[in-house]
Length: 175
Image (cartoon, rainbow, N blue to C red; front, side, top):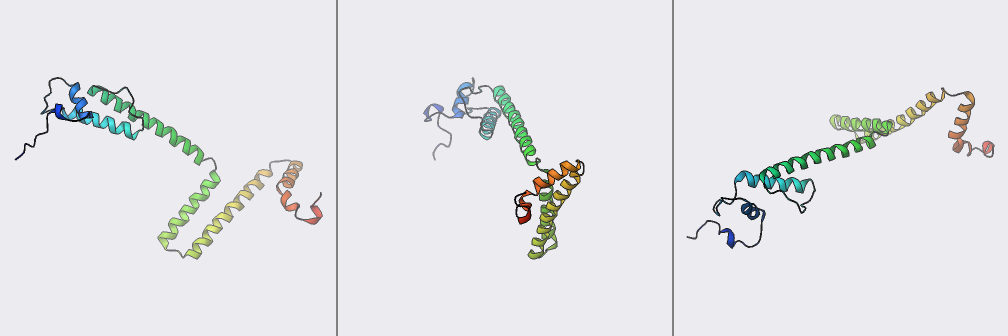
């Protein structure tokens, strides 16, 4: 029966984080190379450093306290970075509230259609209706807004927004 104990540290080939941790501790034997809490702290440090994509760098923690502090700093930095990215995405998403409302309506139609097992043809008609009603609502919103302007400004606005339509009518083409 072979001895199941690990080989002495001196016989191990290469360098690993466990051997580095063992060499940094005083009073530990080869049979007990690391205190479990120290190993877990070093493992957590490596995992958080990898997940947060900070990198492994030239300056590394040596003591358990340094491992715990660096893990805490990396996690706080990752949370701040996630908050900044999330806030930026939120601003970009909410830039067009009309489109956001229409997408919300479409999501509700999809959910209702699944729950009520609505025929695909009716689903298409419902989505078409929502798209058309969104265009109509935008037209009505612009029309209500235009009532705030003077009659001359309203006429200029009407000419500007209807130019492509007026250009297709022979009588108005060169006016």
